[in-house]
Amino acid sequence: MFGQLSNSMKTHFLKVEKTARYCTLGEMNQQTRNIWIVCHGYGQLAPYFIDKFKVLEDGSTFIIAPEALSRFYLEGFSGRVGATWMTKEERESDIEDYVEYLEKLHKELTHGYPEEQFKLNILGFSQGVATVCRWAVSKKKNFDKLVLWAGIFPPDLNTDFQFSMETFQEKEVYIVYGKRDPLLKEEHLEEIELLGSKFRNLKVIIFNGKHEINEQVLNQLK
Image (cartoon, rainbow, N blue to C red; front, side, top):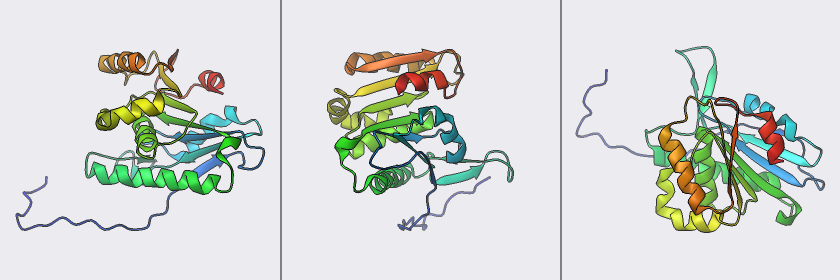
């Protein structure tokens, strides 16, 4: 389909401003005691993803669902649209962009409020798991709770694993997955077991479901 690239071609990169979409539930104010930043999986959109977290609303919780920066048609050239945090093409640039995006969003929405006022809870679902891990490690986030739902700690962070250990060791870290998740492979279960031996506060929650957000588990995580 694609011909051979010209030997004389040069690849260049240009930083541009981009408009990002995010959705929220609740309000950020003096009564806020919990913030949840929830990152969706491959092919999902923020408005539909955040709707799954309504159970967390209690008058003192502010929920933020950033949407990945690249959208595409899920089938063919029309119809339903989804978003992705990255692909294998120029992945390092995509990772850098979404890390900076998440950092700017977090700072902007909490500006003017002291950190000690609220707990910062971070949740990634499926592709969003690697997304939140890279952000948390890269920006050394002082989070209270990290939830890795239907995904695992990204292997490329092994280069910064010592910091990851120091960052996550004293934090609440959860791995959540459905026992009937068709995307869960044997190597994922082995990785979960390995992480359990390294993070002493790691908790694993298994629910009777598939590749999905489960309301009962969210109630456990409140």
